[in-house]
Length: 377
Image 1 (spheres, one colour):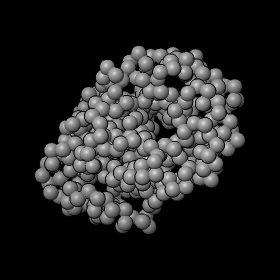
Image 2: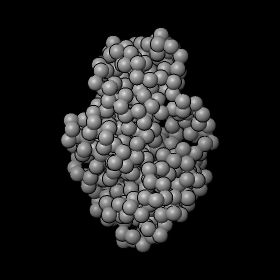
Image 3: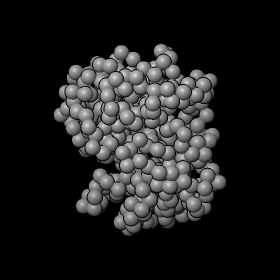
Image 4: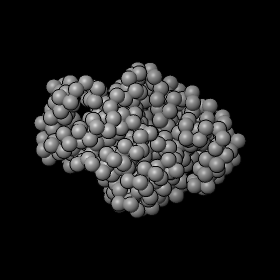
């Protein structure tokens, strides 16, 4: 089997708000789908957390490296792309694009062997996993109403983030968290994401430590991105002093960037994003290192249906990955593959047993949001 072409199309027309200072608009492209086509008629799907213009440029730069290659040799081919792109911008758009290619290669390998990708990654620790509904913070009353609605739909774990949290007052921060806890009840999981990777984040270590103590009072499971993503030293201090678990890593790419955060004890919860970090292969290397040091690995997944499918397969393959992020209100998940997103009676998502990622994409949704049918091949 050989790769004949890799195509890409950005998703537009339904991009959900991200809570960023420079807010995403519905027609902005922040997610791109890739399709790896082969001479035997099999196609593998991947997802990239990057604008399609950057992905298209990266594919042109990488084309001579992947055309004619055997897509079933996932690790060797991915490392070939990494090694030969070192001087072209390693860690940025090229690494993001390689992430999508790698996810598609695992999808292809699973389809070629008749196995779910998680089994090929090392085995299935679980057949279903709990999704946590991920949504932006709003004023306390409005946020509470949304959380009640999501609980009525079956979710039993929730993460709230961004918005005015950390940008107004400690009093508002506590009102938001208090409203969320009251809305979901004491038995549900609640996580808080400060979103300190936003541009010009105003807070530092004293605020993060003080806020972590407030979060403990409301039974918060982890405090995510409480400090700017380059501030390794203060993350280490915060983890030593905070009474709740500290989570992060969504902005890091490749295993080399994660190494000091894992080895120096900066995080309790390690959160690689397979659509940015280098793909499922890179996620696996990071997860092995983290689990060897007693850390939990929960994928960051502000995502598409393809990215969620990859996260579900990863959740099956690692013993500590007992949660996946579910971006609420995104047609790029709900409409692209509705069958993937059906909660069972316990609020769990079944992990597909079909070959590869186990995701079936809707042609109508692709036409609507990618603007073309060429991805179907």
